Image (tube, rainbow, N blue to C red):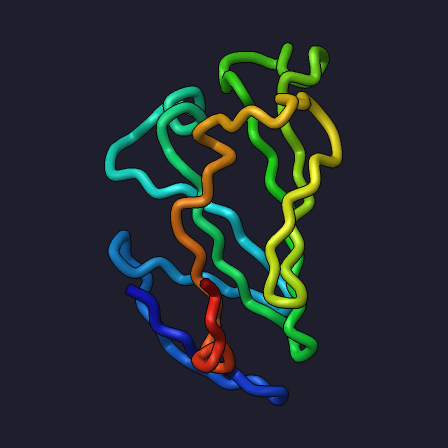
Length: 135
């Protein structure tokens, strides 16, 4: 489902036609993009409570990446901010490990909600890990 076009250090012109089946994503090395998949229109509340997180990781030349994740726990109103009922994480990838650190918001005390479960991890240019035993 993905096509990677590397523009190299000097850049490259490519003409691509976006569609619902083939969205265009421009991603910088060293970044992590958390996302959720869904097939029909959902409210934020439904996404938070029913859909797990997926990670798209594009390591830099030092094999590090970082990103952030904001989770609106109820998705219903602005009180989420004043009551700090959200979660704001910093996600880092280095030394072949992924870490989530709660930077601000609600601390669940170690209990996992659906929004804290990682369903799928995609690492761009992951062929360097072919000889790695993750067991």
